[in-house]
Image (cartoon, rainbow, N blue to C red; front, side, top):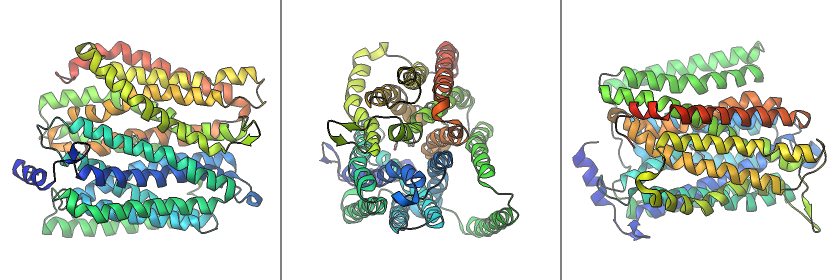
Length: 497
Ligand code: PHE
């Protein structure tokens, strides 16, 4: 988008009306709030739905398979952001992408609400993967479009938006989670569908008034010849993939373990292609090339961080269900409730961290140092789980406070890494690729969960000491290496702070 167009978009957005921020932030805040409500509500019960016995309303899948599916699912949800970003950029603009995305997501939850079987579950997964790929990166992108380049409310705007994400994640396990595990899984999934419906309604009813021109047209639309060429290429690719899948399923070559392996490979191949294309492009200046090199270790650190953080909804969720004392003073807690802890601590601690960085001013740690702290805390959040393993003699139920502590520690890391990560991505990516930086950051999470798809299968109660010990230890070692490499990385960052 040219400078002039950007100016026109900003002028079309009412610049006040939501806590001193542009009115459009209201629309984006609540759209994303309800989308996250539906996503995290669904995730809070999905694992249990998959591995609970059929007599308890579940699908009765083996637990390790269910854990791997959760990770593949999570990985694909953020990988598909590259398709959603591309479609918005080149075909229909972010606003339509958000709308279609919301419709797909809602349909996905409706499919899950139908009492059913494994094929219905996979249909819903495809809908939610495509829908989230269309909605999530684009709704975040529009936040940036509401402010002019010089507007110093922009960072605060993103912080408010991050609160919306976490408020949705905080309340949904309480509602969808409790209803899903205590009453009926499908009723829980229906509540997720209703949440996304409210989000869509908010978006539709307020976008004209609040968002002005933001997101209404593609920034870099395809021209007629490109359109023709690409539609032929897409159709051909779709046919080839469909044939491969059909052939793979028919000959039994495409089994679940093969699919898990493929996701693991894609998780790293896609970001590698991104880096190579950005590095080799003649639109990238030498200074920007150096910044790309600096970004690589940060990206890898983020992958390790998200791998641990995202296990909060897989391994630690199973731990809540199977290893934790849930009956307290006559009450029985739903294991899904633990999923509220991460967003709760993010909401409580984000202002503390914001205050800390402002107070430290120029003395605050550099970006790579903050990333290294992120890894250290992530590692510690796993190592702390060795204590209850030891105290319980390996199999007895443990106090829920151990999980609370672990979720708390990982959030200390998240607040060192996640808010800085997005802004570091926008600062370190070459200008010609700035539209895709949101996707690149999402890919760090996708790769982390692609790694998880491989490793969660090794988790058993009997192996938990080795599991938490090795993964936690590795994160700490990587954190220390990153800490030591910081001066070198900063040289490559060419003045970015
Ligand atoms: N809690 C974060 C969110 O929902 C997880 C995330 C991190 C997703 C990074 C994408 C990229 O937004």
